Image 1 (cartoon, rainbow, N blue to C red):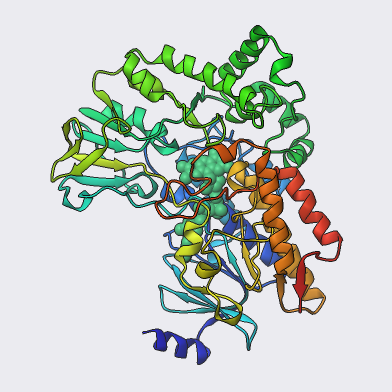
Image 2: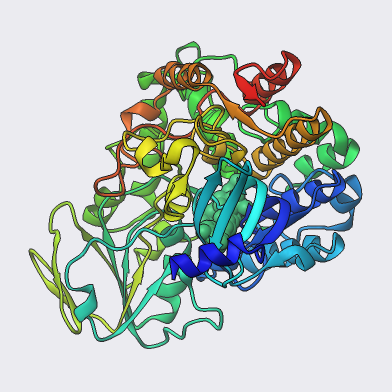
Length: 545
Ligand code: FAD
């Protein structure tokens, strides 16, 4: 089979393009548009049946963004920005998917996307200085540049529980929810996991199910969404000068236009801190609570602990049963060191008579049988299991293309055996003309990804076009530059509290995954400045041939 594919490629039947893009989500769509505008031929290869990426796959009840949608949008074209109006502060998955479809139509992108096509292998051919991609749909691709826009949260993590295969009821994954929906009315449902997708879906599942049992290993902080129309104060700032608003987001720490706080926690009295916290809680804005309470909240353990206490107080007030409330209170990580979630009736749902929380820290799951889940203390009969067990984040989708073979036959899996090594989170030494959008080592999941994606895409496409214009054929980071970026990543992470939490940011949620903080913690604006400086200094840290 492999030989057949190779001969097909060798005999010239491979699709020949300047650039192959893998993925047709936020990143892949903008890439196609930018590549075309730069006069490069391109194809996008997408496993799904249509555009949307995250928003194509995650159709579970309650799926929404958690960055306000006026910020979680493309900004590259002011006319596009004007042409679309979001109906809510936090748009639902169907609305975001419609938006991405609208973008695909507006720029006529689908004609260069091969849907239901999975890239399975990628090989750098030294002789031709081109990548050869093997695809699930037959026709391989030969390209000068290979860009993985495969997403940070696109490889669902398989459940680690024995006996799943013995279960005779229905099994669903939030990250692969059926397109025609699921009728849970009258069913005994189990949700396993209490991350963001679970916290969004649990209130809606509880409304339908006869009984819902939630199996929780680690509680998360959840903050009220107070969803509704976009807040008028934000809209006024946005409408008064959209260009300035967008620019401020690009230069900010998180990709959302908020200023850096300068007042630290100990400069405020208890009453002043509470007042700030209550105002933020009432606003229902994740980024506000994450960044705007006091300047030391993300870097000083004590300044951070104050917020954890205030949120635990809120959980205690929202959940009537003290034992359930206690189980829902996170104690194992600083607030913000793990991505907090947005709550629309999440805590209140545990006051319903048809909802039970099982604390797996006290009673781990022992087995799943044909019709039940058994813990150390009880057996729960269920008709449906919903796995909301998260993703093999940041590297999962990249490593799933196996092997990716670079210079000298080196495979990316081997090169990353001790964890991902990158230059800027975008390129890897030994893998010429290979790019990742929001790869490990970039701000990615610590940012408003729409802003980070646009920055990456602009930078990568501009570099490819400049390379072509200057008559070069390859670009690759040096070993020294890559090692330097690794040291810079570590330095930055030492001043934040992320290192104190075992999370999907560090790979801790995937058994056997090498642990280390994968996103860059230095901030979106500073990261952009570094990329621009590298360009201005003659592609510092890159080797061009
Ligand atoms: P994706 O949207 O993940 O698209 C990648 C695509 O690549 C997928 O369609 C996948 O099928 C395809 N693909 C992967 N591997 C292959 C392969 N080998 N061959 C072919 N195709 C392949 N971010 C925010 O900033 N704000 C939010 O509010 C927010 N909410 C989120 C809510 C949920 C439920 C989830 C899961 C994520 C959320 N994110 C949010 C993160 C979100 O993933 C990004 O914002 C953004 O959608 C990523 O776009 P992307 O194009 O980089 O990747």
